[in-house]
Image (cartoon, rainbow, N blue to C red; front, side, top):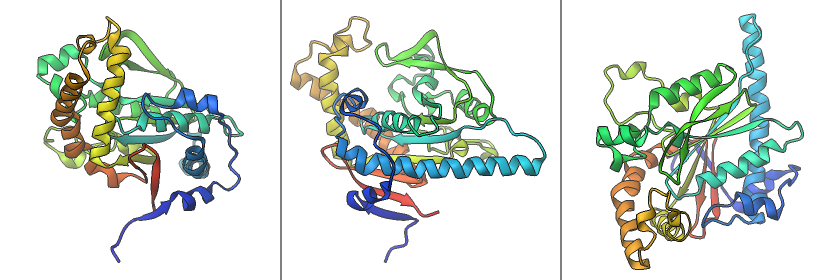
Length: 313
């Protein structure tokens, strides 16, 4: 049999691992947490997300004990260190929905931890810098991010520093929002969601690769949301049509010029954007990081999770 560092579970097997983890979300909660084209069922929460919440509960407690042990060894009281979860995956695969559901479940544990959600979109270079660098058509690729600023943030976060301020990104204007920041103030758990959070490079060669530090070095647990390439492409096209009829209609939208496209014109354009940008980024940069994850959620064509792979060690 092929050697694998993962244990594979179907939904029934994984669902049994929920044990006594209580269900704390209702149908109205799920409506608010679901994505633009992805409606998560209550069965999915029970079978997939509650067992994952239980696993993370066990991991967080064990890691907090490890932090205390390290502090005892060093002879000092360590600062409050958050447990950091990284969630990666393609554009349109549903990683944002997964992140929102996990945040809600984790924040409703009996000890009521403070859980923050950070998206790496805020660390994209502003559009004017991307234009100067000739990277507007490479948005989302590793080189389009201010990795130095992102690394500084996660380093200070794991150092227990309070009141960290980070940029905010607007999907309406397709740019960083000026004079607006998110404050991350010593949470118990932080979920960091983004395309490239598991990568070990920035798209540029390093003069001294052995000295490199990566964003994922600061993660305690890593999740990859996966699906067949053709399914993700189809979801992207469906989402583009939905956006054409909703946010693109807003005159402030960066994509307002696409609001009057016919279905066939919109699908042709969306397919071209996917093939040239998002699909290329998935195959070149995102998918190769999948096996760096501790847990892989594999989705079927209907956007529901069909299988779970958990790293043994």
